[in-house]
Length: 274
Image 1: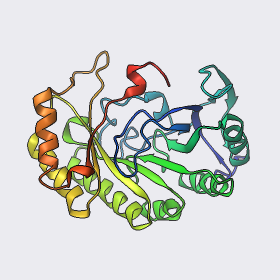
Image 2: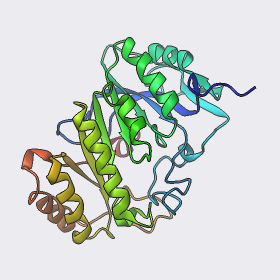
Image 3: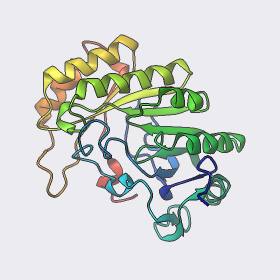
């Protein structure tokens, strides 16, 4: 008999580290200690928008919908793991979080994959973590289930919504995807969540597309973080030039106040930590 996936879900890994993305904007937990719960499955990689997801995805293993095993860090920050079988119960997952808790812990990050794909499990997990007093950080990119997002939004403290530009190749109609991502920002904002948008840019990103994204964020005053793509082997996209980066931050400044514009790099990649 299949386990009820309100109480059970599929997770790719659980570990303790520091938030390596974001900037000094409202909603960002950049540089703060977090326990990361990487939920399995990504709707963009599953083709819901007509592609195989973002070409620069840095967590391709988490795209798998039902991985057999979960990697669990043995001790906080130790970067050594043991395996347990999926699916995992909410109670078991919360116990693992409790075990990885440290005196400097700021929040628990729900990331992916896409944490909103398993919305029933995520809702149950969020409820139990809030009962324990944890601050919650949601890192999300896409869900069709906006009602599902509303179910949990009032229990989320901080959120990062990835808004994909055309160069990410994550949707055939990238503007439609970006509009859905902005709706997600608005739902979170309305629920009192400290939310910001993040856009990964590359050498293929265009000023025209970025004007569109910046204007959408400006309309609702959603803080915007610009993150140059992290190059990886086999990826045709390259990092943007410095001239492109400063041009894009100035474009954002046409729609948002300076305190709502930030530059991010994947620091955890640079210093080789999880």
